[in-house]
Image (cartoon, rainbow over all chains, first blue to last red; front, side, top):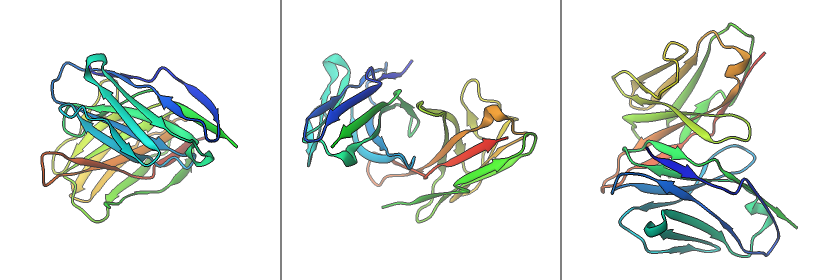
Length: 113
Length: 118
């Protein structure tokens, strides 16, 4: 069965620090997608990235970067030079069947000024 | 980008009443929509997959008669919480699947509906 584990429940950093959010997944499928979403206090989910299982290239988007390693079934997310606006709950998710998402428990990130 | 709306955004109701939540894809057609439930400080749990013109597929442990889902058109899915009780209080989020022109599909989330049952 598929499963997503975000071991870090809460992380607190000071502005401008780098922070990495961990995500480990389990799946029997060879074809799957991995996602990261941000959920600010308003509650609305903000899509950050989607990765398919055949693309292990790391990705960078501004201050955000993602490290996908199939060998360790991990899809970690790093925020460089964190800002207060980055404070939110971040979810890692896995999709096997078309569109059906399995979410991790979420990591609450607090960035203090 | 594609937009998904939910109505209402917040609802407070008395125990025993039924509440209907609408999920609309505003600028695209969605043959598939999903309903998730989120308890405070918890993760999102998939409740059911809603397919246009057919019965919804419910996840294990989700009561079909309690959470009625109707997907009558390509832009609208509704979730009705029947005979609501305080334990049904939660944040309900829908998403709509935009079938991709390539091999990938993109799922767009609504803003959520916060249900409080007194």
